[in-house]
Image (cartoon, rainbow, N blue to C red; front, side, top):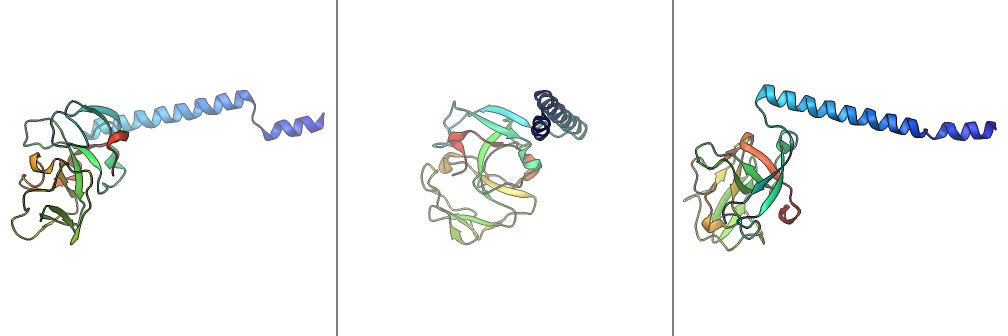
Length: 189
């Protein structure tokens, strides 16, 4: 009998498992509730998954017009942007609420487009996801150096996309990134 008692001590009972799960769920709920409260008080977005409908062909062939993608709101509050991430961003001077583009320049990067290619820090970037080679040179001379709090974004349909190569200023503040697209079919490639 004493052997059974010792064996039971090593494994939590079913009631303890339920209690532990309840405590974890309560803690998670408090964490999410706290995050929402902070978000509301500071004017930040509430973290979570949200769907967005692609309205144009500027991200083809990766994202098609009419397609729905899912994105993680608030992701960049905890993680730095990565090259190749597809993001939802707000551009206050545009009439549309949000845009979906690919990050091609990170803080400190030197970016240019010439000879139909994207150049990042002096190296041509392999981009198998774009619709076709760029038919423009950008900027007109030299290159763009991305500020410490910003990124450069381009649509995958480079020749038919309003993006950093057409905007002034061309760099988007990281704070204007609303979410990271997380749909499996459009993950970073």
